[in-house]
Length: 291
Image (cartoon, rainbow, N blue to C red):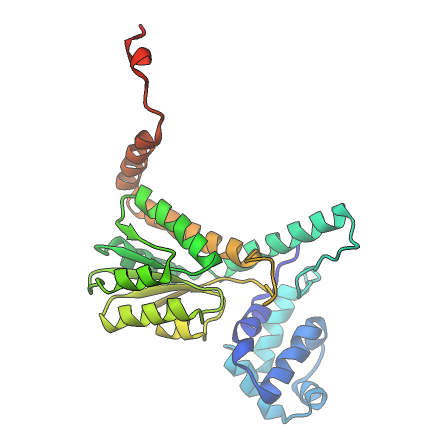
């Protein structure tokens, strides 16, 4: 099974914000991560036509003290299994079995990569903010809106007052009512969806806590959020709707829902049972009279 090393995930997350030689270094590492383990900083610098000190600064930019620590991290995670850095793309000429295999590999990889990014402290803070909120306002557009709708259903079944509307104008209308004791859960793969970011900014201005689910930790949405939950998807800009990104969002949020439920198991079980009863088919008059 393909699982991306955390080092490469970190590079991919900051990649949209990189420019110039920093992007050249990122491209070089992503193109052949197995080679990096056997090379020195000056060799990477020579290949990227930059100064060795820039390699060190790049490593620090993605969270490492220097090139040695990056290599150690990469070696520890990369060596046990050969990694396919990019998604396996299917073509019209592929067999049905090949398309099946690519589909399974891509989604399995996204699941494992996203789980590896779940940060205990971030999940705890998000759960605490949502559990303590008077109302939970959900933000999401397009495919992320479908994910928000799914989360709303789960929150309602757990007994929380969750508010969501897929129409952007209605979303802004609802968010006009936000108060400091409410909370906002904003979902955006890019972290740059205008409707989501603008409404989240409105919530911030009203002192309400904002939790975001995004693929990019330095995106506009992530920068304004009090807590960010990161997903790991290599989804391209051109796509048939959202595919692996949607799975990653659902996974991260399902984990958060489970965590919230476990924090207050008695209340969660009671509310789930109560809502389950409401969804059961009602008995007809004949069925009630029948002995």
